[in-house]
Image (tube, rainbow over all chains, first blue to last red; front, side, top):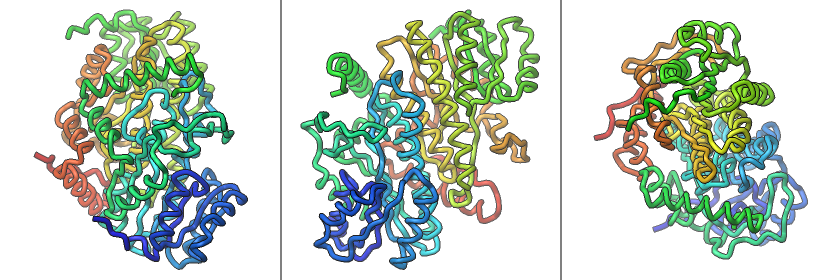
Length: 278
Length: 284
């Protein structure tokens, strides 16, 4: 059973809203009656995304900010809340992938991953929390990853950043439970988004394919919003096999250990023969 | 499993070696026959720690470096490996604690925690991996925390960094399994160490070591036994915390209630002006 009205007239901000899961979340929120501020760094791309959603009228709004800049994030969030009169939900969704061989990653790659995937979330929460505490209500939905609940090989940097997001968000869920605030951690596996084609420096590699078995972004958004409406903490999309791998890894299950070791082997061979991990 | 000889003549670096778990690990490594580079930021404190361990002769060595400085860490790790001819084990142990409500943490303080707990591990690992790949062997042991497995309320930034260390260490364990490098993430609960009384700036406060804290020397012996077995995640003490982590991952309702009760008790401590470190009775 789903609470379809959960999002009606809610004021939402979605970061990384131009494409991928962020765009799909924005579209689904609009369909469910929310007012959505699409936040992105590139004004042209934010405007293009807003235009595609223009059938939703003035419930579609835009914010231009770089999520790795704390002052810009703070201004954007406070500005939106002031304009709309409140802030019900913040989706810290912006992030970048980072599947690579560890020894080939530079310290600049690491910094980029940590700035974009961890600091963006910190800045967002830091700006939204005082507003939500004053309201006595609010819901922060942070995009982590399946790689934020179990550790896939050749994603050490990405996994580090996403484990960080999971730990922070789950901590805050407990910490603010009595203050009327909700926190959800979204852990998607392979979703059909441009993340597969982007390197940490933002370069797009069109020639890289999105894997054939990737899960559709629109279905991902529906599942995320259904679970978030129930104020679920960790939301694994699709629920399997991610959930079982997480539990198997934590349990020290030999089958899961063998699965992750095999993944390491397959990815190493793929890097050596094809130059990419799949 | 007999691990008595495992550390014999191994060349080790231990960061944060002046005190706490780092000092205890260094002492236990020396007892087991290793050569240990004690690494710390403060030259006098490193020298003092080395002085206390002088009975182990020239197997005790020192490195002065700030773990939050990538260039210093690289110079220290590469310098030790060059001097000793190899590097067998790196213990990324240095770190700071922070138990404060999220809304009271300033961005500068957040940066200090991420630098001290996350970048320190990244810098050490980044410097050591190429050396160990050339050798075809090596072990990197990073100190995470129970708060790197279970999201303990009122430790949000600490949890962020420690979860990140767990994810990093475990991902690398799989990635390098076929190339001879092992990775362990050490996840201690309350260990009797200086972490409870240190401010982020290194100042010493009056916050005491909690009653029931696990002795650091026992923790060190346990950790080294498990590292010798090349265990990935090392929970200290193992019971009941390994079980709690699994219950958390399983979404166990008793564990969920325990976490919410932890948050409630700690919230009351915050309102009384106390440090929120309460732990309710463990779930059955």
